[in-house]
Image (cartoon, rainbow, N blue to C red; front, side, top):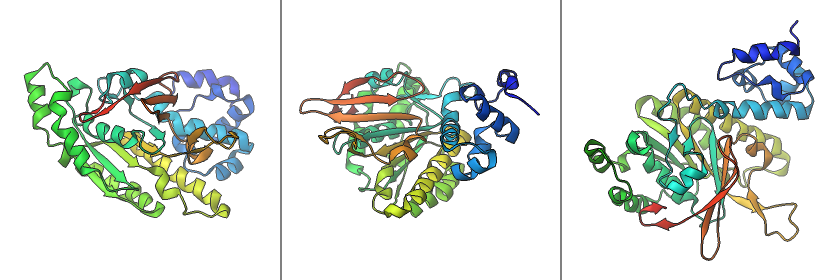
Length: 330
């Protein structure tokens, strides 16, 4: 029987999917080793309740294991597979610096904020930057854009496309020709979804088929909140948590298997702990927060807009101002 004493030995030969057992207490380490649950893939096959019974851990300990498992792909980032292109530009130098270089592959990046603060503008810009040449920190690939609230803002994306040659400048003539000649609109696959079941079907069936036939490297869900609002009664909270986890875990899986950037838009709600009701926090609660790799929040005042890193494995919490122009976010 293995003991926690073997943890350091095992970690030295770990692969990208392996858990870092050293972050857990000795009892949890022993339980994971005894059950052979050393990778996130093996753990995320189960619900937390099922897993807790299998390994005989407390609710709190099981929850910590699931947090680590859900975020493992982003923690490793798999830089060795694509060392020159695992970071995607946001199209704004200040925001790239804020993010530690840009948007990182592998995992879920959440962007939250109140209505009108710039969340969809941010998503539209990323749907274009993913198509940029590699020299501009793009990926020369397309995007899948899932709308759950409003219709896709076609006129706005066309306005941004018409300004691309002014917003980005290439040193290479070849890259400049590519920048100007790319058919940006045709490289965005758009789907309109209204229910949780439709979203699950889209993610589990439609997206995997699309990824096999189209050069897609970015998935955007705008917003994840809309389909989950109002579909569940108070007694159905456990089912809601399972559905959230099912969607998030499969997005993580697609991200790792296909080398994708995943962006999910979230809305905000008043904090329960805030008596005045002025403090806004991302919606969907802890069940969703534990499955997010990087959390960004946008806010606005009368004169300015800000984007803040709330948590990320790649950079410290901080914020920068930004503006929305005809060209996009700057």
